[in-house]
Image (cartoon, rainbow, N blue to C red; front, side, top):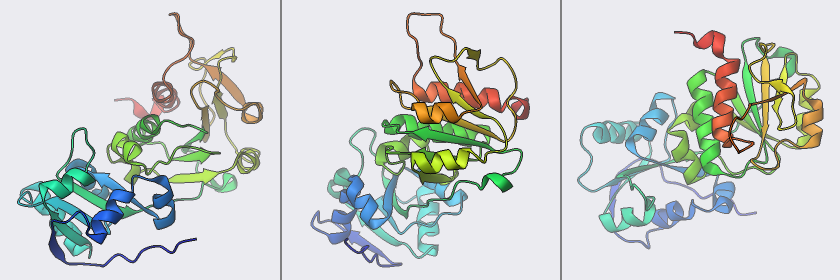
Length: 277
């Protein structure tokens, strides 16, 4: 296995060549294989970087368009320099190869990924709401769910089985910076089943075959919400281990919602008592 690359700490320098080693590294972070090997990921845009700063993260590198460091960009550059990050002032041509093609940003940050452990069931606080997502594949859905978890004050997300990478460019962007606020963990289905067996509150799974309306009655805390990918849904193994299966009723011709929309409905219902104005 390849070792993780050394990234210089501190300093600001101008970069105009696409052959620069730092530029090559940043460009390669769109590949999951490279993100896995390096433990790094890319976050784009001042608003997302502000979220990282406010959450206490420190960048390894900061990339900004030459002449664009004013206002909030200046504040972020000062923050990155104070954190000892390597700051690269790049030309439009270089930035065009690093930023997303749609709605490109003038400032990018490179960060180390942060993976947490799911809470131990025998010591999980009563107020916790944790989300488990099984084999979800759409980065936009995952990023949006992470954003909703942040919005309702839920406690974290566990990715179960072979899921999309939450540190992909698309997922980070869809999270609107919430990826810096929400603890993320990973587990296999077998690990999840062992964890669920000790969970002290409700384990609510969404399922098309369920008979219970998701609004029928309150959820026993701490609450674990399990959702599967669009189409297949939760696996039979995880469905059978839930304390209750619920369904979001449909009045139209479709029988299911977009996963991120369904997750939002579930989370707002579960957290309804704590979200009253």
